[in-house]
Image 1 (tube, helix red, strand yellow):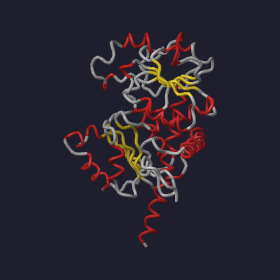
Image 2: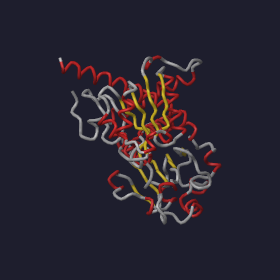
Image 3: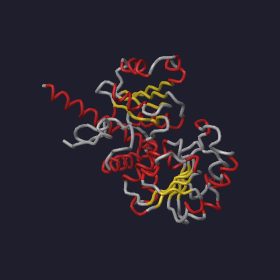
Image 4: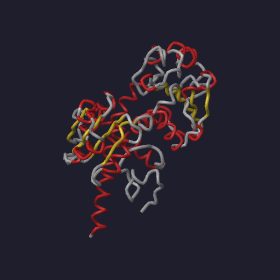
Length: 334
């Protein structure tokens, strides 16, 4: 048995295998590496004539999206189907959940469907953890993004992108640029990069878009674009999340682009072979110059491709870990 710290007890079974995937926080380096290696092996499936392998045949996965996200939802659907699982997708923003039904009420109804796994996206931070704490013990929960808290599968597809293009995390510099305050992707990426041994993690943003306590992530903070991008290997741009901003945090999108937008001029501060990333959707001319988004240093479309493989890996590993968890529980009751 592996002793677990409080941050990952809920996510891992007694053998330290993935059971739920709720956050990067607290997960060990060897597990993140296992996700990346498993995802790397699944990349080949996308090039097969028949893009299905029977690893989750007979299992049912339900995508429960309380918040819209076409890209995340679609890649989870594709990932589940490539593993031969049955897939149900519920748009909860148009269901009874938006008519006053509590999250716990919704959960009880979902449990009645006898589903093996739920992929949950919710606008409230901590929703995925809440569901995992109250769900039947034989059901796995995958966090598809919760509030401003975490987006662990997006983070892992970003890590796979970096690994495939830059190799070892221990010898690179990574800059995360833009709306750090409202970004669950930024939080998950900072945690993942630190866990995987990246020695130089930088965040570049106006002071109004930096969260309180960001220093706990072990990052270097810059409010000057050229200084922050100096000699970096990886540039991760973030979407400007106007819908989550209070008034006054940003003068205008035009001014933001002039100071913190990624342009040909500002990218020149990075290494010549630096890669450019963005979790999408892109606001061209606000966060990034259009020619850079489509240029030779951009790996944004690669991120989309890698996203399916990473989500296949997470679905498969969590289902395996949950099965072993249930077997251990049964043995302990006899």
